[in-house]
Image (tube, rainbow, N blue to C red; front, side):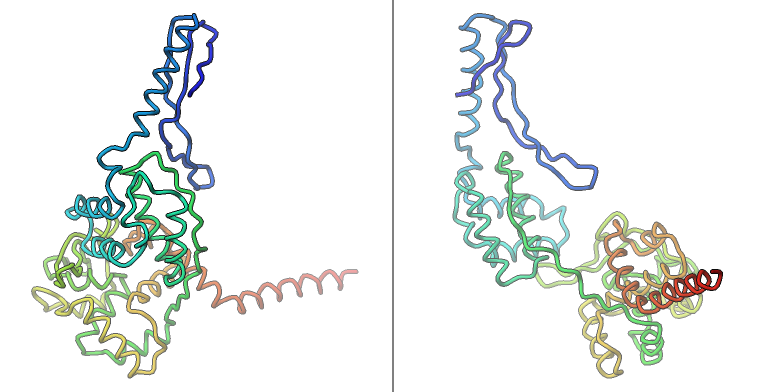
Length: 357
């Protein structure tokens, strides 16, 4: 039973746990803070103390009593969570959530929300970690956390997750891009590659692009082609607020769409990926993803000194996480050259000092 304490004013105050709130730290991490609800009595006698304690006890008991949502199984809560957000989430996100519902964290699905423990969740995550990448496991845990935040907000998760792995990123070189451009010249893949490498635009954005979105060399990226649960390609708004943007392309790219009316590319994102992979294989260019053309663009812009804020705006990135990965890879590629420069400077410095003695 909660115990009341006497305040300097003579009143009694009894506090009981209410919920957790997330507090962002200076280093960017998030800490969960316990929030308490206070019950007071102005009666300074022992009767006032008991009154405050009784009110706090009743509140705590009410919180522990299973509610309608608490009596649901986790699977039922997850179904409802997805259904309530279908109209606001992207079709791809809905598909990913339903895949998790059908194939992952299955040991949780038949457990009531109010009966779930940290051990249940840790065991489910451990099972997933045996068959999935750390990124997928973390995504699955993120969905678990979101569901519990709505249906059991007082539950403070403390799950041990697999460490993130550094992305094995390949950024095509200038030589790769030149060879690629020569190979696809005059084909239906030429414009998609140019838009991705020198914009950069995403596959879905390229496939949704219309001549109505173009004014001279400037492209207004305002739509995205996505794959739906019923296996259809549809055109919708960009994946994020940052995705709606204007890109001023170089003239040699703009020449390719000068006389085009209607859709600029008559391909789906899936067809672009399939054709691109076949082109790389036939041309002898090292394999990389079509999406890595965007990373090439960011890497080049960074190398020539363009500010990150502009690179993010041009590429439609809402955060600098991708850029940091690209830059880290670029630095790795240049490490030998940079080592030679640094060591050469140090050698010259040492020789100068030695000669002055």
